[in-house]
Length: 111
Length: 113
Image (tube, rainbow over all chains, first blue to last red; front, side):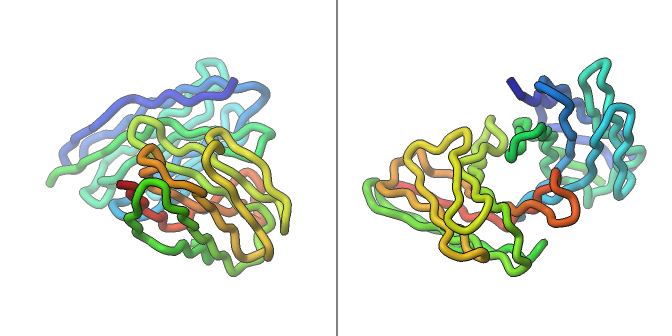
């Protein structure tokens, strides 16, 4: 079956620290992989995606590389800001219509 | 935001009452989805639609029904609400430009007492 496992939070970092949020997946076929971000009181926004092995998705200083050999899609950012405080969701999509989400990781960045 | 609105944004209701949530989109997207978001579960698909009058079940469809009588509106109905349906409900559409990408509405917070 399809599933996504995310590192549990919450994660608290100081401003300008390096961020890694781990995500591993199990999937049938060749999934597309996504990171979504949810700011307080809002819906989910697509942050970045990768559709095949070794692709790197990037946006707003965040990046993640599709690693088929380790079935991983870890999210990284070199220097976080207070405005990055949010909940981050890893997700996958195979040939079906729905997305399979991880449970989310809450990030808090303190000044 | 792909022109997605949800109504109501917040609702409190009592066990056993019917509830309908509405998702409205303005960009003629064919595919629309309803998810629920619960702590420890992420988002889970309830139902989706692939056209007017064309719908199918998702992972957690029990206790929910949907209807799509026109392209722009996708309705989610709880025929008899239960406390286990207290959740945040998100509507999503499938991107026209990239079919593996979905965009989400702002959500409806539903509390069933």
